[in-house]
Length: 191
Image 1 (cartoon, rainbow, N blue to C red):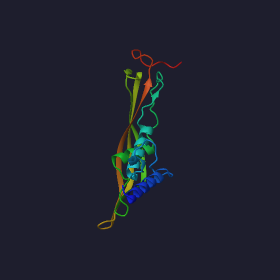
Image 2: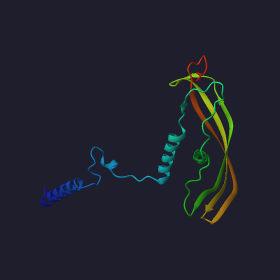
Image 3: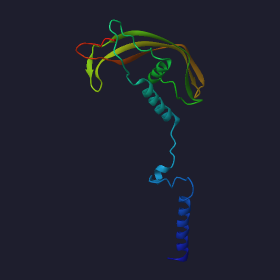
Image 4: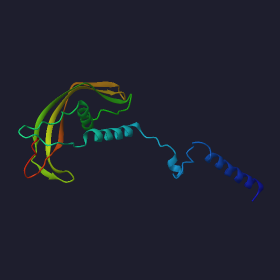
């Protein structure tokens, strides 16, 4: 090996050793390969989508299991859907978020929500797997959302479209279980 070749190789090895042993540069991350040690940028759109999905699962995708229904009185459903739940359901059906600033944007303003209970009934007792004997309580709500929508288009011809009387209807079902003592005899009386 020539004198210049060995000096170049030695200098290269010294440089790699110096870089890999200095601070938080991503090359000294333990068992991860070097490719996965560098940060990868994520679009805010995908981050918001994952956060909304998690929030919906945490707040609304689970079915609660309540105590037995009282004998002699009609069972009353849980609370009606919250305004947040109605707006999340509307956003899933007709999204407004997103858009490109100065090119296309959509806004929903002056929102008013009217909630009506259209059905409230309890199924007869039966055996549910992983739950045991229970009754399923159904509550159906019709939610009417009155708002004004504005579309702002900035390119190729800037203009604004405004719908001052936008009306949307969303149907939301609230289901929950009531425990029962014995499926054959019906609900347990409260003592």
